[in-house]
Length: 213
Length: 218
Image 1 (cartoon, helix red, strand yellow):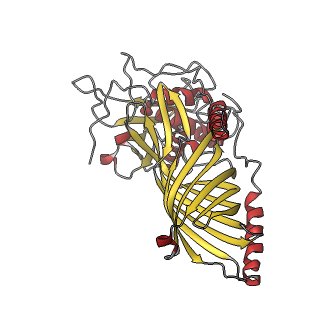
Image 2 (cartoon, rainbow over the protein chains, first blue to last red):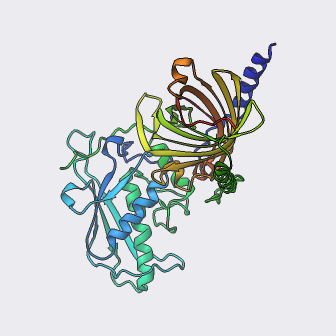
C-alpha cells in the first residue's frame, strides 16, 4: 500500500470512528389530538405571531413562554414573536377576567392559584384550524395566595398553554413536565423537549389557520 | 439525556486567542525590524461539511451554505525555504437544516473566525505549501437552536493549503490558492440533547491570493 493510500484510508477510518450517533428521544408523551390529529406550525408560518392582552404583564409572560419554547429546538423548527395587533395574530393570549398585579414570582412551592385553557377550532373541512388559537388565563376567584404566588402560577400556566398552541395537545403524566395537567415546574423539562422535537418532525394532519394580514 | 447540567463551558482551547494575539503583537514588532515581512490576502469560496447529522423521525443534516472566505496572512522570514505565517480567516454563510425530503430551513447566519500560526515552504518556484494550526470560533448571528447555550468555545483546528502562481499571475502578484482544514464540532446544546461525541468537520476552500506586501531581499 502506498503512503498516499495509507493516508487516505487512515483519514477515512478516523472520520468514521468520530461519527457521532444521533440521540434517542425517548421517553416522551403523546401529542396527538382527540381524534389522532397532529398539528405543528409549518416552517412557512414562522415566526408564529402571538398577541398578548395589554393589561398586566401578560406581554412579558408571553415573551418568556415563547423564549422558553424556542430554546427546546435545535434546528430552528419554531420561532415566535409578539405582535401588537390581535387582528394579525396566530395566537391570542388573554386574561379571562381579573388581572393580577405584576410582581416578582414567588420562588416557593407551586400553588393552584390560576388556570388556563387553549381553544382551537377545526374548520368545516376537518383538516385545518379555522382561526387564531385563543389562550385564556384565569385567576381563581377567592384565592388566598400572595401576589407572588399568583405571578408564579400565571407564569408557568402561560408556558403550559403556549405548549398546547405549539401542538402539544395532550398532557404529560410526568409531574416534572411543564405539560403536566397542573404544571408544577416553571419551564419545559427534558421530556417536554424530546416530545416537542419529535412533534415538529412528524407530518401534520391539521393545517394551520389561514394567514391573517 | 446525557449531561443535562451542561451549560456554557469553554473548551480546553479557550486561552488560544490570547496566545495568537501575543504572536500577532510579536509579529507587528517584527514588521518594524525587518523588511522581509510579507502580507498576503486571499478571497475565495468555502465548502463546509455537515456540522450535525441527527434523526428525529427522519434523518436531517445541518450544513452551512457555500461561504465567501477572506484570509489575511503575515509572513515572517525563517531559514530558507521556510516562512512563518500568522493567519486570520473569516467566513460567513447561512446555516440550514436539510431534511430528508429535500426541503431546507434556515437556522441562523453563521460567521467563523480562525486565528492560526503556520509554516510555509517553497516547493517549486511557482508553488508553495502551508500547514497551520490554530483556534476557530463559531459566531452565530443569533443564540438560537444548537447555539442557544453557547458555541462551545474556541475549537482547535489544523489546515493545509497550496498556492500556485504561474508566471502570468505572479507578474500581477496573484496566486491560486486551495486549502482544507479540519476540526471537531459539538455545542453545549447538542451535548444536552444527547450527543456525546463531537463531529469531524472538514472545510475546503479555493480562491485567489494577492501579495499585498512582498518581502524584500535583505
